Amino acid sequence: MYLVEEATQLADRVFQMWITAPQVARHARAGQFLIIRTHENGERIPLTISAVRGDSVRVIFMSVGKTTEYLSTMKKGDALSDVAGPLGKPSEIEKYGTVIVIGGGVGIASTPIIAREAKEAGNHVIGIIGSRNKDLLILEDEMAAICDELFVTTDDGSKGIHGFAASVLEQILKERKIDCVWIVGPAIMMKVTSNVTRPYGVLTFVSLNPIMVDGTGMCGSCRVTVGGETKFACVDGPEFNAHQVDFDSLMQRQRMYVDEEKASVEHFHHGGCGCCGGEHR
Image 1 (cartoon, rainbow, N blue to C red):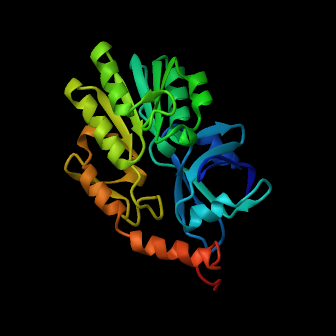
Image 2 (spheres, rainbow, N blue to C red):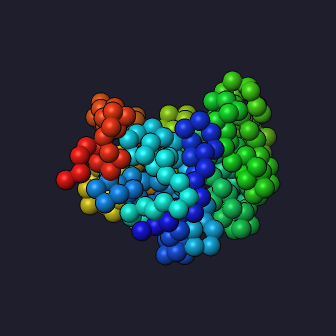
Image 3 (cartoon, rainbow, N blue to C red):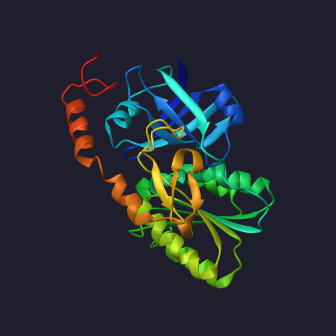
């Protein structure tokens, strides 16, 4: 069993959890993820590693489905059934020069560990984090402490720059030489933002979030098209060269089980268990 050390709410439906997992923490790198199960009969869900502290790893998630809703109810002292990881390939971090790390919405969760490793590699790190409004913004202070420069955007202008991360990125690219960019967020945000760097020929990475089951390359459910070839996000990624990703097919696959997911959440709200959405068996 994996002990929950801390469990707190960061924003509306956004939660962070520190989990005791010594073997995972010992090997975890930026860009990698975990597969967790809350109970023995629970579904497997992937969560990106947000930070490492001693023998613990942090995950940050939004309560949107049956399992994440149940996960959001867990408290300090509770335990998870399984924590498998670190999985996936680490971020391709080296001394590039000046780099930008961009997070949108709950995707901001992935930015501190990337920014920290980029900084330790000798890069000048610029952070851009954005959300729909100030109440949904997370990890601002943490990113400010890591980055050499930090820009904050909100769609409604309630904090920081009124607008989107893509606009700030474009302005920076017009004024300065940027050597590498990481973008983590909703698929449509990554598509739009990565298109900004394309005319400048800047190496750009995105972390893809397709449907995923086993996380080890066996099921094939996380397949994505990159450079015209089929890749598995769990073992070939989750980070890929943004300018080679077929975002349209990614977004189409993400919508495949919307009806089933809604039904599962409704069942959970009407008394279904937090393990499997139905009865124990």
